[in-house]
Structures are given as C-alpha cells and as structure tokens.
Length: 224
Figure 1 (cartoon, one colour):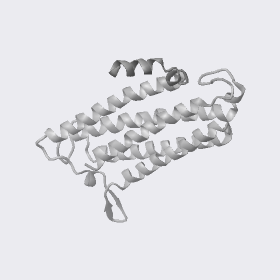
Figure 2 (cartoon, one colour):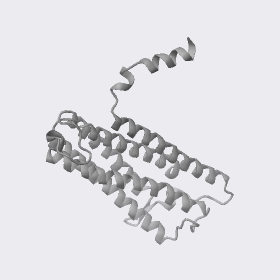
Figure 3 (tube, one colour):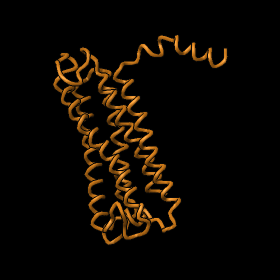
Figure 4 (cartoon, helix red, strand yellow):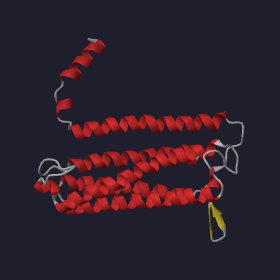
C-alpha cells in the first residue's frame, strides 16, 4: 500500500474528477500559475528590501495624504483595501443568486462588483500620479533605495492590470446574464448550457483571487 495505494485510490475515484468542468479546471490552473508569478514578485521585493544598504522609504510617510492640514498615513491604501474586500462580498452574493437563476440580482451584483473594481483602479491611478509627481521612478525616488520605485510599479501595476481585466469581464458577463443568454442558451462567447450560470462562479474564483493577492501586497508592501 503506502503512497502507491493512495495514488491508486485517487486515480480510480471517478467522483473526484468527473464532476469538475473544464472551465473551472482551467481557471484553477490559471490561478495556480498566477500565484507563482505574484509569489516571485513578492519574493523579489523582499530580497531587494533586505539586501539593500540604502535606507528604505517609510511607507507610512510615502503613502500619506494631507487632509485638512493633517497628514494621515496610509489612508488611501486603507480605503482601497476596504473597497476591494467589499467587492468580494458582492461577488459572492452574485454567485449565490446565480445558483438560484435570479438573473437580475446576479447581474446587478456583478455590476456593483465592477463598480468597486473601477473605484479601486481609479484610486490606484491617483496614487501613481501622486508618486510620479513627487519624483518616484522605476530607477529611483527622493526618499532612499532606488529599488522602491521599480518594486512599487511592478507589483501594483501587475495587480491593477488584473483588476482592470476582471472589471472588463464582469461587465461582459453581467450584460449576458441581464439579457438572459444563459436562460435562452443564446449563441456567443461565454455562453454555456441552458440554465447553467457556472461562468459566474468561475468569474468569482478569479475575483476572489485578485482580492486575496491584494491582502498579501497590502501586508508586505504597505505595512512592512
């Protein structure tokens, strides 16, 4: 028996594999590969930060906003995090109503999720503009270690691209749900069998992954 027995049991268990659709399987494979990419980026950031002998900029000062004459550290980042985590809640509810075949509530919640995502990207664009105006570049910054700029633009830019792509697909799928494409089995992209809202769940997997990655970026980049 041993490991060979365990492998034989898993490979012969039809229930473990036959009930998984190709769409879900491919999304999980994509998310796994994306996990490696984000992991490499964060490891590279931590390596650069720990190996440099030049003082690293203090995130609480760099990402502070002056409101009413008072400098508030990380206030914008906190709001961005709240917005993105809230979008996970609306996405989860969209998947729930998708299971119930309530297309109007599903579409409305997906649009709300897209609105949260768009708000996040807009605030990230404001953050980029502010830092670029203050002199941050991929090759340097006014506050210390030159690697700060390249790490910031690489990590937040890659994540922001994921959010932007997610918003685009949320709008496309929400439109198809609202029109009833999944009830009528209308021909076209992302249309599955009649009455099957699985694409909403697959979109939810992607969106929750993007939110989870932001939690790690927030912890390692902004709080460390």
